[in-house]
Image 1 (cartoon, one colour):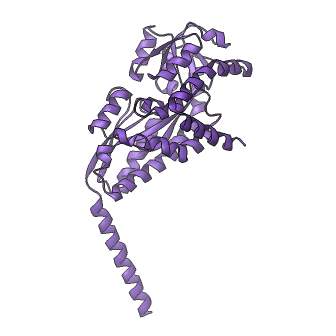
Image 2 (tube, one colour):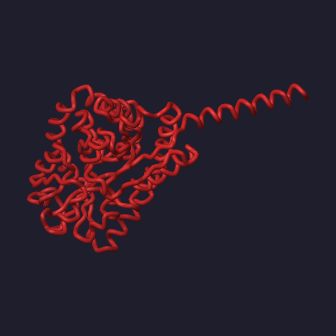
Image 3 (cartoon, one colour):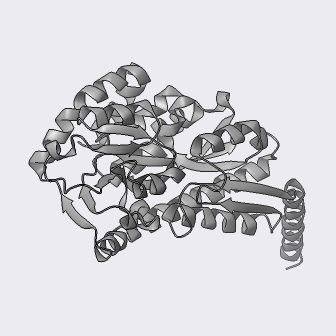
Length: 335
């Protein structure tokens, strides 16, 4: 009994000592975390979850201040601030980071993923980690990948029942080359714009439409300035959760683990929320008088064919090794 009591006391002392050491490794810090979508969007819900987890895990020592809705400027401006060390965290379309590491453009390939199961397996596996690692020499550390969802086309001109109906439309695209080229391949007119400018551009008829997942269309009330939504599911955008390397390098091992763990937990939550909200968002678009249609399988086949030359072009741009590795991993998943 005496020996058991001594063991219990020793264990208790060890736990207390470990707790004190851990507490000493956590400093008072503030993290600014930016994104383009507004409060209520599943990405912002993920940010809120992350902030809550970090506060809990750090005993309130690390505070995460959220800046949704593009209030700190465009994605490109946020990335520059992050590299400069004036902004700690951003979550954004992974393809936008192709300007930092060309291999990341592969995530903007049209029809790359058939479903979310494939996407999760790739981004959470060796391919996703390897691609994020390429950002470190640019002053960026990739933590995890969140989800925006499969993209669809909206416009204010006409319903799109066949691929030819897309021709002539002036469509906003994410500002990077592959998105410009796939819109050109459909004989439409691509207009690269930062996301905060999209609503006004559609309202003023400077552009006819754009493309985004239904959760984005709904959260930003694009139904107020767009009449038609066509379900094409032509592109899936992983969202990179990134942190400034300048800031990351100031963290203790305990702080890094805390942030990594919070990011992983928030990732699971964010994807669950995004997938749960999809149907609700689509129903709300219909209630707000958007006319929604889905391309037939034959028309989707034509859409895929139109985009094949673009995929071939950018397969060479991102590099044979990255393209081959991605396609090999996808082939394994599809067996």
